[in-house]
Length: 197
Ligand SMILES: Nc1nc2c(ncn2[C@@H]2O[C@H](COP(=O)(O)OP(=O)(O)O)[C@@H](O)[C@H]2O)c(=O)[nH]1
Ligand SMILES: [Mg+2]
Image 1 (cartoon, rainbow, N blue to C red):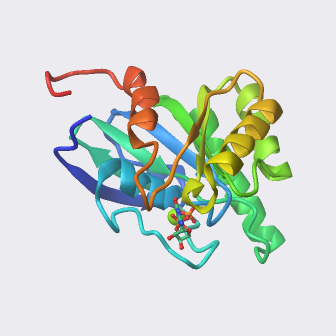
Image 2 (cartoon, protein in one colour; image 1 turned 180 degrees about the horizontal axis):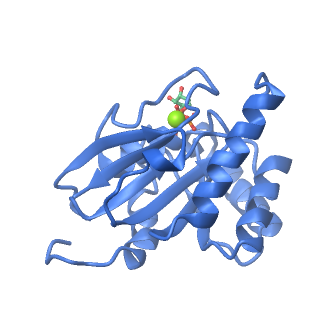
């Protein structure tokens, strides 16, 4: 995928703030601080576009990025921030669940896990939730640069065993490792309306 344009469009704290345009959307979900924004930046080769914050739990809204004027990347707020209050957990749940359940133009999701840790309880709950709601998705196992080749192999097998029938892609934002593999899985879900590829 050649990225001709990638722009931040808006942050939404409620459905009325979603973009009005009808373009296909790909949503990225994962624990707070897992590396969601870094994955988005690496896929788009735009440093700092999706703010890669080192402070977990700060991104509480849904962020929309328009790519090539044709589709959106949607950065969902991260879950599992230990210091989050009950009220902010509930507001996270109602915001993200209503987006994921009701957004007609959502065509595919990406669930990001940390390759050093593997899927946590919360990640597995998210996997089950995606399945229950019939949302198509695959898993990106990020921060793979922190592991040796052997450790990474074990981590991916572990993730695959916990998440049967799901594609798991090893990724590193710092090394841009796995970037093409992620695009290869996203590509079929983005309808081509121009001749660019
Ligand atoms: N070594 C390494 N660090 C990463 C990678 N991806 C993200 N990080 C770091 O992890 C922290 C959280 O990343 P961020 O993208 O903001 O996570 P988000 O909260 O899920 O959006 C930041 O300090 C990033 O620099 C990666 O692939 N490798
Ligand atoms: Mg982020």
